[in-house]
Length: 459
Image (cartoon, rainbow, N blue to C red):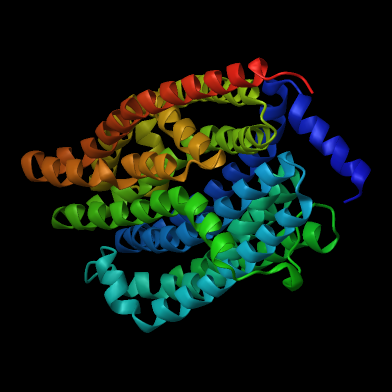
């Protein structure tokens, strides 16, 4: 990228009105999130036609994918957050070091996860919640997911670096193309070639590697400031520590999501494969509805990180408030639709009376708490973006497991299946309310920093 191109990008990130900037950056990410969730739901849809146990296997392997993505997002957000603040401070060469280091660390990690997962595949599937009837399907599906682990981790890094640079359109192309290919692959391999759940796994693995190649192109063509060139890779403690600490909220969020899926599957197992399948389908539907809000948050992250690095603190506050309000409005509309059409939505994935009965109640309960979810999301993303890793990690942990797992264990014991259905919405409400004091305190700190800036004499 030329100096002139960088100056234009700097002016765009530092001076464009906040609503326009956040929305512009969010739209490609929302499209990517929608397509990604659609292809995740496509796996569930096509596989659910095989059997209830096969449908349950997608929920089990979803926990495995969450583990792999946890490490990818850790390196991706960790590198991206630093890169955006460095570019805000116009430290371009240092930003290249963080991008290359984050990429290769994620590649090594993905290879390690694949090897370890294949070596301990059976106990891993058991821990993730497989029953005896689900295990054969989970083994077939997870084999190909593990083989795709290096592509998944590196794609997470490149996607986040592109977003944090304000180049979300490039990320959208890579993710969207991979998602559409996965949907096509599911149809061909499951419906036409009758490969069963293995067909869904093959389709996912192939699409992940194609997506990885597409995400590499902007870096290879030098259309961005960041770089993947090995000469910028630095295995230094200070750099690695900054990447890991800023990425820890993502690892905590995704890692605890995986632990939560394990706990949910284990608590649901006594009620049969129908309960596991119902909760898995409900989770996919909620994630799909929530992805617009997540996309807005991911459009907000580069804005907050860049302007924090450029010491434009008022823009950081404006961006957070705009994102939180707009996300809440979106989620209110989504919750109303989800509650109204809960039965046909669940039935779309598995026309099993037991699955529908459990899933409809779970979905409607989650729709109630969905209105509060953007508060927790914005708080978590804000602190991660501005480099306050400890607070970001704490807030990420709240919704992903710290509140959910204890609530799940208590309510499932006291209320049975209704307790399992109620656990996630109650956890969402508690974690969102706990986020508010941290946001208010941070806004006070920003105001104090602005006052100090204004008090300094002009040189």
